[in-house]
Length: 559
Image (cartoon, rainbow, N blue to C red; front, side, top):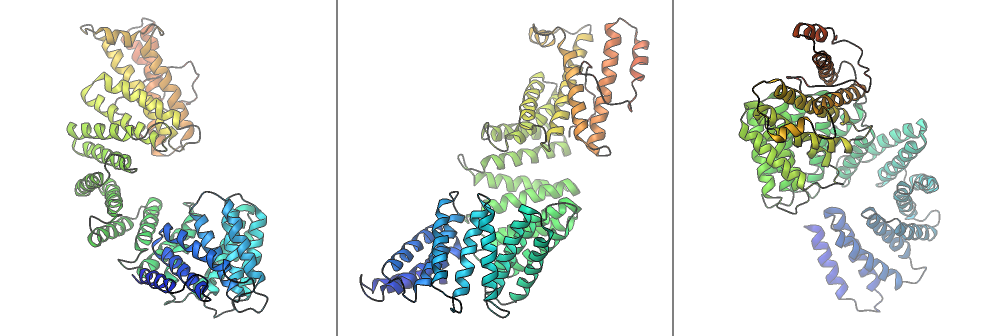
């Protein structure tokens, strides 16, 4: 690799200059620049940290007005700023900003390199602004970028960089203040930057990639697909400039794949899924199993194949997804940070397989894998609610198949735990409410059937479940709670949505069961019971008093 050869060559050069020699400062700077250049290509933080040392040493052995001093100050400022981008602390940013200002002071108006000095300090201000949100830093960054751009007229090799960075700062200010003029100027500057970075420019791939990333960050509204469309085209163009083997190929590949999947989520075009699958297969063919990103390639392709299976129901996609997830799991042994994700996704695939073929063995596998994922997601894990919810659904499904009360009881406990993590405003709260209501109404149906069966011989455990000391009628309480949960779920859903219809269907069934329960408790005959139940209209107003009761309906789907 050329960058590695550069570092080795500059190290050898430095060894030829003894301490105190008049040319040692130049050799130190050259080594620092080579290390920083290698960091920019392979992103090894050790290179960046090592580069800072020679820059500091070079500055220390040069007199204040040495002609190379401005460049050293500027280069050191860039290294320190890059180091900050890989940290959480903010304090070090004072150092690069101070160095950048010093470099500008040593380069008066008309100095050949004053442009880079003006360009680098605002690049340091922008990260600091983005952390504590100090508008003064951002305003100064904008002012300096404008000054740098004035010194880089049309045709200057670095003009596109100034245009791009000024656009980013204006977009930051737009995000903070909402001034449309900033957004419009940023769009104009980005277009100008693309023109100023022609085909063949050595940094064109990086520019296209960063511009695409910025678009995907700022255009996330499903109603505004234009930004996403443009980002896809930019990522494609960047990927063409980063062939297999390029150090940044993986970054462009994954960003393009994510944009295509996002567009599929918005528009549902199978062609986008097909392209992601093609890219994933190409990655697996080019990169060997020992590659550090091989597990990620396997995982991403498996997830895309499962998504395509859900769209087209081609069982071959699901079978391949399971195979790839198993291979990924082997590459993520105990202690690997992504092992829980592989377990969870493999569990979902087996759940899909059960839904498709109805084999209990697949459902059992889904439960086992789901338990493994949950164990690796303790309280506080950001995805614990997903593992709780999915395991609960699989246990509830197994209860419906095998009627094992322990599965249903555990499903209820898990759904309650998931609901506690999905507070008001959580996008999946309605799903947890509905599925918990289904389980409660299912328990009501099961226990009520046991009570009504004259030949049923209930164990002590079932009897205690039916009538615990703290509640006179456990089954009726389940029905009450299911109605309350389903009512809240309906409030979170939009009429016309398929989930809204399913939830309303279940609520109607619960209200009818409540009506039948009231008739039976009053000692009425069966015909009266049926008449009362049928009087509860499926289109009745959904607002229910807290004292109303709930129950389950066979055939109502989870959501």
